[in-house]
Image (cartoon, rainbow, N blue to C red; front, side, top):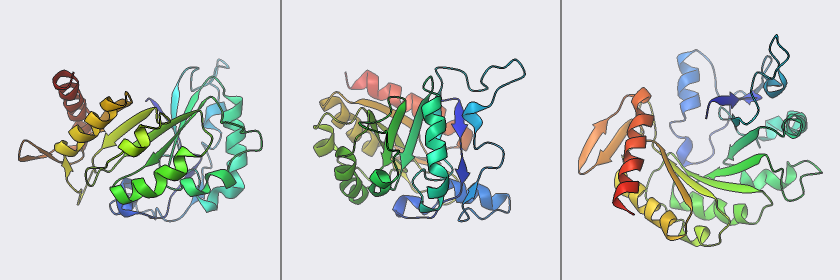
Length: 244
């Protein structure tokens, strides 16, 4: 994933996974308050921006991580969201990945022509523990969307997704640990169990980030942030090779 689009910035903590939010951590380092929601002054229309040659700065075929420094369905963004939807609709040649902790607001926040979902939108929810999975997944399964993902991140325990995966409505599961100061532990045994569950129901799986504190084979590894993604890739390769 090479492109990020943040039409607005900032969020409110709303679940256990938010405790050590990376947006709050990074904003604090720069003297900013991440609880203040602001519309982007320079990049609200980023997907529509063009270079000097008249070509889109975000090229056709790109997947765009959307609102990853906020939540697309925040109440504070209600005044801006319709315009953002129009940008998404105009760039049908891009795929927009939208991840939310507020899936309960989804039906009140979609455009009138949403129907069964825009084909260029992948919708994801985060389920950092079993309680959040059991709260959000039943809602998620019943909303209209072309492609549905579950992000288990930051993973705080083994999360049993089998009741939701067996419906055939979930295209992919992605797991990640927590980063930066006070990061909670990511146990590779949890990751392995979730991988086994996805394999059982032929659901795509991705382990995209170990987190800063990673437990594997009884040993805790302190991993630098820029190495978390590469180490997770190695962990995913291990799973693919050992669970054929």
